[in-house]
Amino acid sequence: MNWSKRAVIELAAIVGMVLVVCTLAVLQYRWTAEIGRSEQERLKGTLTTSVRGFDQEFSYDFERLCEAFEIDPEVPMTAVENRIARQQSDWERVASRPALLARVDIWKLENAHTSFESFEPTAKRFVESAWPERLGNLRPYFEAQARQLNAGDTGDREALYYPWTFQGSAPAIVRPIFHVENRADATVQVQGFLILEFNEEFLEQQYVPELAIRHFGEIGLTTFGVAVRTAKAPYRTIYTTNANFPSSNFAPDATVNLFDSVAEEARRRGHAPLQPASEGEQWQLVVQHSAGSVDFGVAQWRRRNLAISFGLLAILAGTVVLLFSVARRAERLARLQMEFVAGVSHELCTPLAVINSAAENIVDGVVEGPRQVREYGSMIREQGRRLERLVDEVLLFAAGRFGRSGYDLRPTEVVPVLEQSLTVAETMMRDAGFTLQKEISPDLPFVIADPEAMGKCVDNLISNAMKYSAENRWVSIRAACGTDSAYPEVRISVEDQGIGISPADLPHVFEPFYRAQGVRDGQIRGVGLGLYLVKRMMEAMGGSVSVSSKLSKGSVFTLHFPVFDSAEPRQGETAKPEVAKA
Image (cartoon, rainbow, N blue to C red; front, side):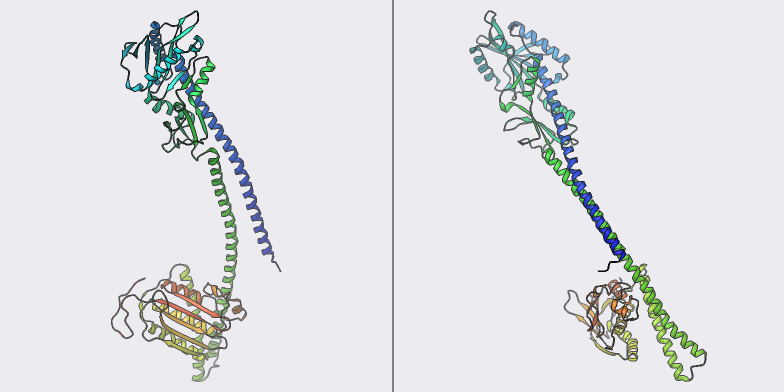
């Protein structure tokens, strides 16, 4: 195989571009994987920092609350109320979030007598009242707890560090009020319970949301969904950043038992810890990536970036292929245009040479007698018509390219247009020794067309048939209604028995400037515009043109005109149908 220099350069460029695109794809895949790992580590680091900050601040606030209301077992019961009152006053004065605490209550045990007292801030003392409904079933819990502790052997050290208990139903934290009955053996008795009631509205609607925003970011801007819920089913959500957050999800990115953290902080500071009343009362911080998990979110991000990157690379590769294709088409178009210019020049020169020669003979007196004058006149007329057709084709092509072509579409009778075209064609065909066969149905319906354009299409097909008939000087013209199509149409077919068209050339015969290699080798005159103009005119009139051909057997070109869909007057009728403008 002989490779041209241009073909080798193009092949090398294509191979080079393929290598570049493949290299970029591999590098992009690796870079995306590395960036994905870095992003995953960054997100997990951010998550760890945010969870730790939320947990530490929550632990600090609750541990300080527990620490602020601790009571020494050695303080007598008569002095307990005054001490708690001072603690309440100190809390309101120095606490960073005093609104966290709604009420301070005491449930007293005095021998067999019990009483409930609630601290009144305005009076700055405890006032006895009935057991409130808001504390629900805490009283049975206190009674059982008191019996259990008094029946046991509780030491003073154990009483000092006895844990606070979180009661989620209230919500409140409670702790027994111990008193040392006998200093000698340090016997401790339970004399009541201290109840610190939380401001539930402040806790759930302000305190926890502020913590979440401070450590995880504004709602809608954060990558993570945050919720505070109970740790055991059935789950109760205290706070969530998203109403669709899966609070029952057992596989979040991070979970922290908040009261366990409070207990650890209290032990670290040497104070009584805080514990939930039951596992179901434990509050749990739950954090989950918006995509479902950090790993899945990063994988999803990576897949999306890879898709975008590979899409851009595919566009780049497609652009290169398109550039090569456009370059090839431009080269082919330039070659066809050069052949068109050469063909037009040849087509112009031949008739002009004949006309000039005939004119010189007439001027020089070579032509004598009426017979020779008629012979030279016919020659000049024929060559003039040839020039006229060539110039007309070029002008039609130029008008179509610059958007200046226009057609007067109206209901048109087919037979008169065919008769007018055949009147001129029959003379030329008879002089050239052609046999013309006509099969024209006399009752053809009106069609939507421009009569002048229809005539030019027929003329071009007849001229084309004569040009490529070779030695078989026979042309057939048929006009009939089409019955095998979806819509009614009139078909005008022009057939020859000439050189035919090869299957490779058949898809290109309606392209501008196209001339088959066999036609160029046979030096058959033409510029490659006739069939292109026929196709363009038919499409502009709402019709079409088709071709069937066999090499060395001949060709059949068929014009398809849509039938006028109103009443269908026949030949000779005087009624004029309504004109339809395109």
